[in-house]
Image (tube, rainbow, N blue to C red; front, top):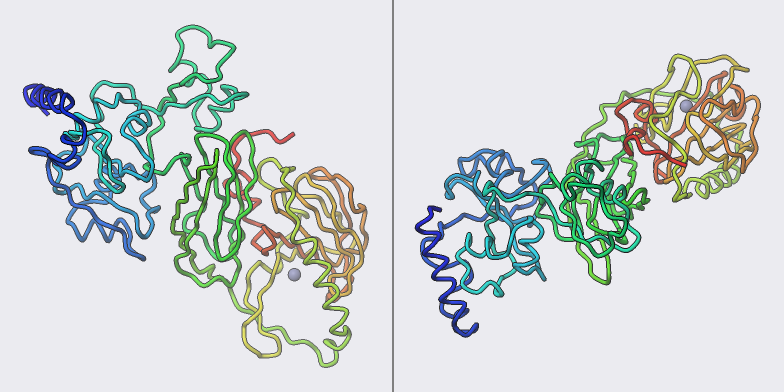
Length: 475
Ligand SMILES: [Zn+2]
């Protein structure tokens, strides 16, 4: 807007502010005075992508993502309101903010590091106290004002913790707020957090990171949630609750994508509650086919009768108890190691048919081709939660690595740890064998995330889920 118009609006605003509030409110709707450019709004329908929406309006994914401050164009959700920038002129001078329940102009302006009058002027608001939910407020950018978020320091909060929470560097945070060293007492102060782009998410959400996106069958989905302040966080995905663990003010969850999850779109909902107020966001996650192979296994006649159903059921029950463990403490640091140094003889996820029947079961872990007596190593730090002979799995060890991550080792010839024992990465936990229902010495390695069998090899990868809390030190 040019200077002349700017002054005109300023005058108009001052004139109107001088009138009794209700009259001003009735004389024009919010944001409806004069030449405010019309905008087009689009409500995302299930299954729509930014790409399909952009095509529909003859614009680009980038333009829509920019206008709506969407950090990851893959993350839009059904019901989300989008501003379509095609009818708006250049979008590099402002971004859109959609008013959510309970938001005030002061609050919105503060969120973007702006004075409320700046926002009021940019939107030709005649009555700044009258905002409606769903209304689009234009947030001026590039006006020389500092960008970033403002953070109210909570009692007991440290600068390092605030930096972690927003994912910014400690030094950038200090530099944005003080020319000299920061004061000792911070509680109650407002800090400018540099480089934080508002995401349009309802407070107290700041940022949600998901990886990998899309996820494949048998993958582990890592969910990282950053919030403005400490919250109680609840999640739901695949009709199951998603348990979160907190570390340095950031919330982490790992969700196992079952090998038989139908490829398609699934909704992840997250609810954060703080000081008695809550907000819920939903985002869509795509699950892709794991492209696993198929194998037919022929069980020799009579072999299946070696074990009776009761024994199998008792073992399943025993493992179910262990599988359900969720230790809020994280023991591992960085990617996992392999439990043995050997070739893989059977990968995770291979669809299995027994005696020519349907392919309705799958290989639940990774098999390593290695002779009896070879050492088996803990792939990461943890606590042994099971170390005993089982009928089907033979001599078995299960390690709890914390945050719902557990690993299992079957058919061992020897168990060299005891339940309750703390183990370190690289420590010997037993020896390869051929015990239980096994047709030759090998190591079968199970990897459980939230009780779901996943592909453990992903956790060995340098950029896998094991690397997700980046560089942070566990105790
Ligand atoms: Zn196996």
